[in-house]
Amino acid sequence: MCKFNLFLDSKECKYIRRFEYHSYLWYRYHKLFFGAIIFRGRKLWAFNFFLKLKSELKKRELVDPFWIFLIGLMKITPEVLLIPRKIGGKIQGVPLPISERKQYTFAVKWVVKLIRDKYKIITVNNIAETIVQAIYDKGDSYENKMAMYVTSNMNRHLIRFFKR
Image (cartoon, rainbow, N blue to C red; front, side, top):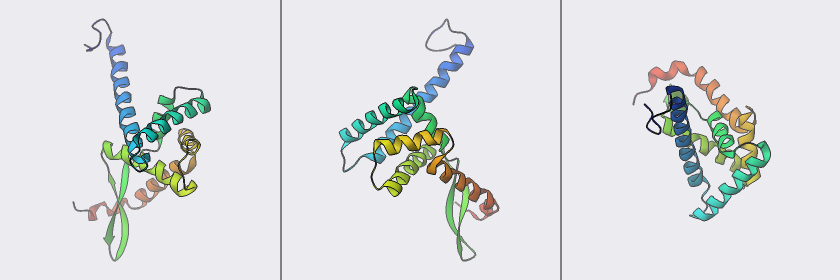
């Protein structure tokens, strides 16, 4: 039985559980996003920035910005990470799966780092453009994820060298 309403059938309960999971993801992503864009400890600035980002995403896609932000960051969330190890006198990346919590962290860090490297300053338009491009499997952040997958596929034979 579903804990919210006793009169719901199991199919509706499944959808409620799925929505709870998505709201948890929303909480994780936007909390990490706040931490990444806070500039000199200004939380109010980060909160206002995030509200502007939500309105910009709404203007661009005409859909609920909750889903745009969530799907955009889920598309660029990595499942493996390249851990640098020195093997045979050469530093190579050993692919290892990472926990769900680290996946969220790396997705947000990638977005913020790519925008800082490309534009030197974080603006609402730059982040909105990056998130919307990620939804359509385009842009620098998605290419970064795919490059990591290609490298991890090439280096999968190195997993035996990794010792924790």
